[in-house]
Amino acid sequence: MCKITINGRSIEAEKHATILNTAKKAGIMIPTLCFLEGLTPMGACRVCVVEVEGAPNLAAACSTPVRENMVIHTNSKRVREARKTVVELLLSEHEGDCQTCERSDDCELRELARDLGIRINRYEGEKPAPYIDCSTAALYRDASKCIKCRRCVQVCNDVQQVGALFPQFRGYHTTIGPAFTSPLDTVACVQCGQCAAVCPVGAIVENSHIELVQAALDNPKKHVVVQTAPAIRAALGECFGLPPGTLVTGKMVTALRDLGFDAVFDTDFTADLTILEEGTELLMRLRNKFLLGQEVALPQFTSCSPGWIKYAEYYFPDMLDKISTCKSPQQMFGALAKTYYAKKAQIDPAQMVVVSVMPCTAKKYEAARPEMRSSGFQDVDYVLTTRELGDLIKMSGIEFTALADSKMDAPLGISTGAADIFANTGGVMEAALRTVYFVTTGRNLPTKDLHVGPLAGLEGIKTAAVTLTKTVEAWSFLEGVEVKVAVAHGLGNAAHLIERIRKNPDEFQFVEIMTCPGGCIGGGGQPRFTTDEVRKARIAAIYREDEGRELRQSHENPAVNALYEEFLGQPLGEISHHLLHTHYAEKERVV
Image 1 (cartoon, rainbow, N blue to C red):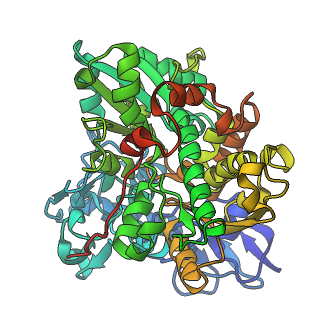
Image 2 (image 1 turned 30 degrees about the horizontal axis):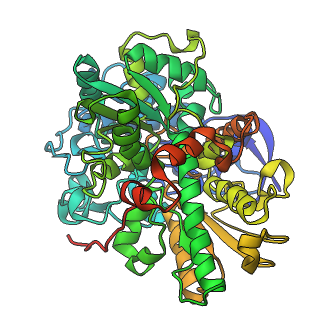
């Protein structure tokens, strides 16, 4: 530790910590536009400058380490004027269009200008040439709004290790985008939306489906149903000023009914279904290996995260045979809504519109994939992010926080706690282990509250092992087998885990990959700004939702069991194979 002084306050600081982090811990806020928690500071925006006594120039707080007896001023006249000038210069080049920009309410640049007291911009700069890129299903780029903070570059290259975005050219002509200023759909972009989640302005946003959904709701000939992903219930409240981690499941259902949806269902239903299909698939692979002695594609990877699927298609095609053939819960739901539900409700599937509410921008891309038409129609028609649903509720004049709670519709709204935890990194794996252990032993997983402790938390790569003992007769060949599992969240961590598996293919039998840091609760379509503190609050809320359920294991879901009895027959059966499973192929990386 060392002693420093900030704004006249004596503070004990950790040696080598930055001024920015030290000040934050002391409750002293320093503004920044380029800084991202946990990543190497860039010092690119210069908004976080502070005055250090004895230093000739102002220092960037995000990248300057503290030292013994350092005296720092974060709000001196010199600092205020420097920050104001920096922001005014950014504004002079920024094609803000604030009256209609969808980031008006949460634009960090606009908020910073207001906090700095900028009422009239003293500088008139040349505006960049307008360039709109709407080439992908998920993302919409407006280069004229870009302030070159490089957050998107850092998250794409350092966190996700996709490398779709780079700074190009120099000085005023610097442009952020794919190589050679190509459209996003010509490079290996997985459309995860983490760039949109960290962009401080409106330069990258989701490709909005709000108007399409409104048109469907306004059409009396259409039967419009909606499914909501588990992560939404722990984050939607943030759109209305509620703290991160506030569970708003009941209010969300009421709001969706008030918007005019004909039925409000839950993606949790098909999350439970995914566990039965994916768990059975894993057990079949283990049977073929341990009982029949066959060469088997192991470890089996989860398949519910579309960004991960596209990443594997681009970068790890040798792993595609190991990925579960199960569609994601979103796509399973769409296929069942236009077949099973349509038949039960006596609705023409051609007149049905399936809307998803997802924490993920890549779900927009997934819904449009040509493989996702097994119902005879596009299985899922439109996808709203959490942010878009928040906007749609506000546009409709619904006072969200005053709404009463209501419940999902049956049968596709019935679910268990195991489905809830799909929202969290490690949750899909834990849900699968709950059911696989029960199927093979006839007993519940012998852990506290059914949780698998090593799989929780925000460590980038997590591992665990469960030994199958006292197995039932049908699975006696698995007696004493140690099922070793691994979890990675964030594609950079996934890449490290895959390299580890390439070196030791027998280390794990089952692997969960989630595209976004923290899992779906940290998705690219969630309310901004998502820090680890926010992720932890949302994760805790999801575990509370799970623990408050009467049914907490997917195989206990009565509606899923009825689905098999009435329609599917059995897991991995002919009908489920047609509707609920798919395959993927290598994609060429071109520029």
